[in-house]
Image (cartoon, rainbow, N blue to C red):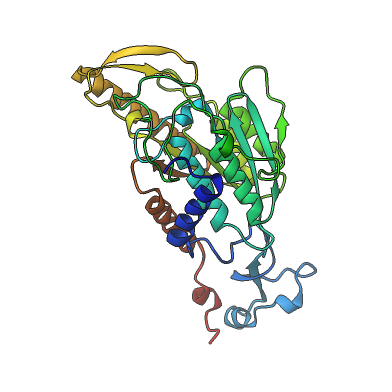
Length: 366
């Protein structure tokens, strides 16, 4: 069938997201600060000179014999900021999707399902050469332009033999209806034009290649107002070499979580968790280009690799938890839509449990 045009791939992705996730995130979202709104959250004692009499909750006042006022969540427009990791390590994949494609799918899910009147979406793209910033804007055209850019972005040049299952097999069909080449730039027909992509600004980076911690810090500085911050990465950058250390990006995530609700989408491929027994293979570090021949027939080596990988994933999970971020792991060999559905339902149950029951607060309102 050949390589589909970006518009066709985007349409296929949009249909998949909206058909299977529609209704989960649509509708009103709770404001991050109390203020004028319509969503009742409870009641508190009246403070003379500060509260308005028209906000009095007469039912609670009668039940407690003390003046109480209604509290509501503010009706606010939602601003979502995305940080998408497009460094070479994200071009790896051995399953239905590679990590870059799964990252685009996660961005699409967030973008389509948080879209609404007045809601804005902005993004920072972390690549091997720097950080690109896309201002927060409204509208479906802005989201589609951002997705088109991610789909057609130039990939790292890695020419390793992936036939042993340690990379993305050439010609593998994918979610987007095209082969998933490794280390190949998109064809000229697939490159976005100036009118297809949102306007972007290149952000000066520290000396050398920017790290994930640098990108999170840059996002924190750019996102002035409160909102939702979504980090899409494999979080492999900045991990400590030995035991007992902390990731270099943990402090930056913690600072970001002070102002924003942070969702960390961790993208993982099964070959990063365990090695198959396929004999002698050549492994390539996509970030540095270093190569090493490894005999996967060695059972003890495979066991040590699996243990080290599990420890690495646990380190990432604990670091994100300490930083106050919500963790959503997605695997390239699993149903990522089902994972997002389970995550949303879990978060809604937790939010519902944390909110006081309206009937209990209002008491004898009937």
